[in-house]
Length: 110
Image (cartoon, rainbow, N blue to C red; front, side, top):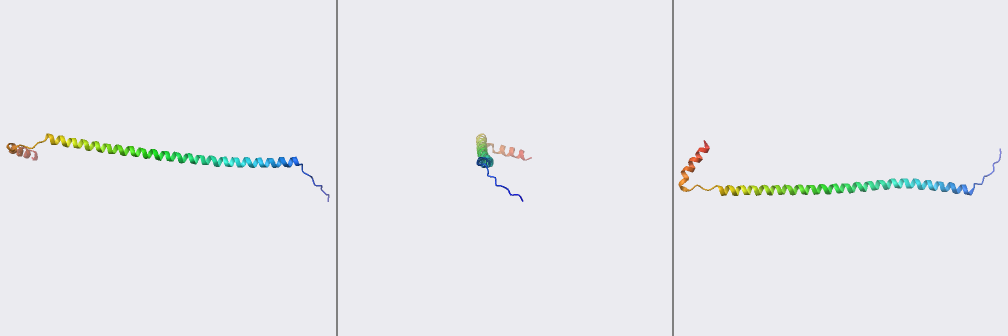
């Protein structure tokens, strides 16, 4: 068997190899952390957009409810006005005209 001699590595080459590995590790870690950061930012934007949409829905619901209340108030006002007009226009028949009023009521039932 032949004997082999030990080769002493060049110190400069060892440093270059170590620096290459360190740089590679930094690049891999940086790429992974950039991906995690991007995902986190996307999640934050989605949360903000969802909160904004909920706020807009709530505001739209309040506007619709206010419109419905206003329409109901307008309807009641109209009904009150019509009832007042009906009351003002209609009047009781004087006692002298009572028999004529009974005859008119009889015609409506026939």
